[in-house]
Image 1: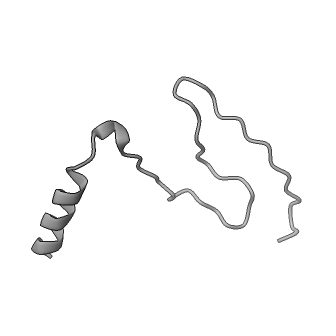
Image 2: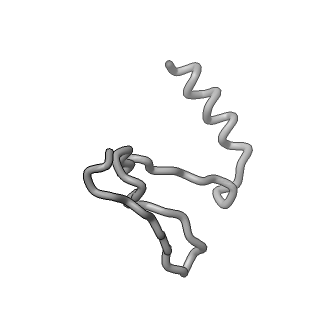
Length: 57
């Protein structure tokens, strides 16, 4: 609704852009231990170690 939109803008406007984090979970696959996305410090590569036995779901 328009009222909820205005409330959100008022609330989110209290934060600086540097304080906001946006998470995209669209690549999550619950059948594996591996996710196509990960966190890392800016300028560094993501390292991920996972153990998965195919067919053991």
